[in-house]
Length: 234
Image (cartoon, rainbow, N blue to C red; front, side):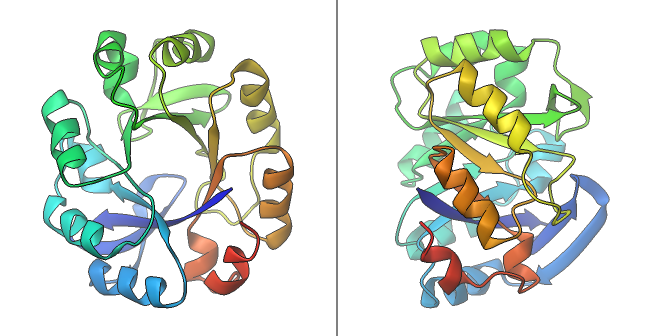
């Protein structure tokens, strides 16, 4: 199971939000590249990078720092936030990004997701609040339902699903096991769990459920978990 360390970019800084609320932001580093280098030195290999400005504005805004990160991240790197065109997908693929996270555009225009079939590196973001998929930086409910988007995702052969509990994200309250179990029972696509992961026991439980990966963020920055301890659980 992959342990993905979260780096959320906003205004060129490394930050964390609470439940995706842009008014509840905490800055952890003004130099994201240095933050990644420090984490790599401690043993981190795989990363989950989100361009929050891109998610809010509908197109990537932190490309320069993302490209620099790809040069120093030794393992798997997935990127999301404002990826709503084939041109942007191609750009990140050319940079060697391993997982391209698409969300809003795929829900609004399933043909966009179908057009990416065969690339092998597409990750579908499944951002859940109150049991419903959310889009537009988690601000609006998707018109397409979860069952339908999962069927399309399987037909399009996406590499994995990034399932995020918006209500748990950044809260240090533990994963939404119920939602993860429900989605896992509905699809054979590998799942990366995100949102609320706080303790070693959370990671062990997710691994036991057969999750393909987990995203760990705030618990690392708040020093509730250490990189070294987390890596041992992969």
